[in-house]
Length: 233
Image (cartoon, rainbow, N blue to C red; front, side, top):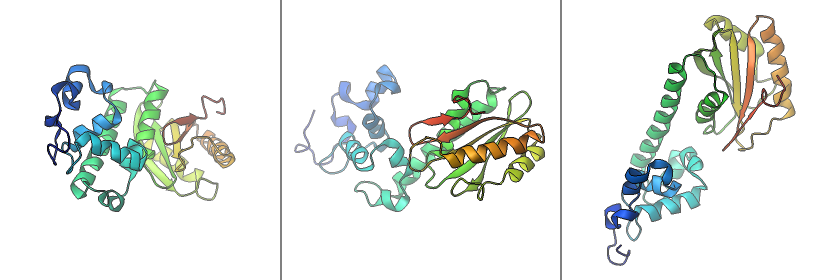
């Protein structure tokens, strides 16, 4: 492998084939690659004095994780050497494609039978949000997905979440069950007392129209908390 001193503008092609992330992916699969190697494939080329892998490692060190890199604003990302509008739009496109793939999985699966499936989708939808967002998956009597909507924005409390609006959307969509979720921008998925209070209010309101509240999922940076799994519903 050439050193950066041999070539001031290195690409992944300058690496020995066995060390190239692309070749490693083709031989062993994407799961065998580190975050920096996956990001290097996306970047394709480095900057003067650094390979794409070097640049990827620097980005992960600067932003802290892949998730924080995806959450970075356009202005913040474009301030980073080697990044710009083109890379920002590509990152956003990758993120949106991942969300749509998860949504297609939900729709194709028929009845929603896997809690992990719903958690994965809700985490993809909400973990990047810079503020708290309250959302819902609306389900029919067979737990087939009717729709997903982001309903409220801001701090989660009885003042910002209106159970009657959730009930109204359930009736409009003909939902028989619902999974609600919201994110904690702090990254910590531990439910607060306000979360528990609004969930109890919402459950009482939904019971009046015979709609089941199956779960309330709190989305953190790298994990989720489930009210149903804790026995709170």
